[in-house]
Image (cartoon, rainbow, N blue to C red):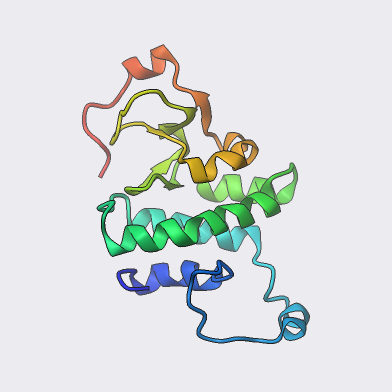
Length: 165
């Protein structure tokens, strides 16, 4: 990954099952299964999304970093949805880790669940964001993690005048 800091590279390398990402090391599937390395824990994925959000609240959409994240993150969200999509301890763990934090990739940075809606008419960035098309199939997980179906009028009245740093 060209522009990703060492702390963020862990996420992208650990979810490097995305076919377009380079793989530095190929291990036999049986070895991966035996060691348990083919299944990342929900807490690992959530913690890595949390750290990416802390490190990259805002990213230039035309940057190499944005390109790399656009390739890798849909796979991370798919794995998170597969692990924490239902009810139970995995979803509870993801909710605890990601609550109130910037963890949702918007194409130009990361946003908190409270600032994202499944249906967002108009462009209200950097304050409010719609769910990117790549994440729309995971609406059940997104709703469970605090993403609203739409922004209510009274919520728009309380809109912050300045974006969070």
